[in-house]
Length: 221
Image (cartoon, rainbow, N blue to C red):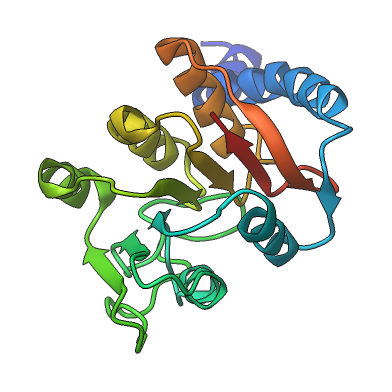
């Protein structure tokens, strides 16, 4: 085989596994730009905590069922449990606590792990479900019945994890449900998962709040 052809084949072998991902990312960027332009009049905030405060003040009147996917050290679930003091509210966090199951951007597999242990929380309304979503969520949903306004914090980061969660909890997402994405600006992961979920389930959601660059975005049915 001529040396030049051999080199070309080696380059193709190296590049091909990333080809579809790269092309898909390029295709998603204009879609994300269109999304941002069409929602530029939504209430904008500098930090995600300001979005949480606004949601609690303007939309979440009374008890909530708060489901968080991607807990890590527990900062967000603690914040929400302090924000909403209603005794009937429930705060349930899902995580393996072993970190990311696969690399995400410059984060290696295992990033955000807590050594396999859930964070400590004194609030009895807070509970944790340990394990990969694909291993723990189905059995949880067989027993769970939402009794209050549903607030979902989708902080799974990864495409597959986010898409799995959205498709499995779809029956719970009735009118008035809120879904918050923490890394929505990643067009290859949370944004892509939400787009694909909406297309597959014929869903239409309304943006109610976002950070300036649409990294954190809150939707309502």
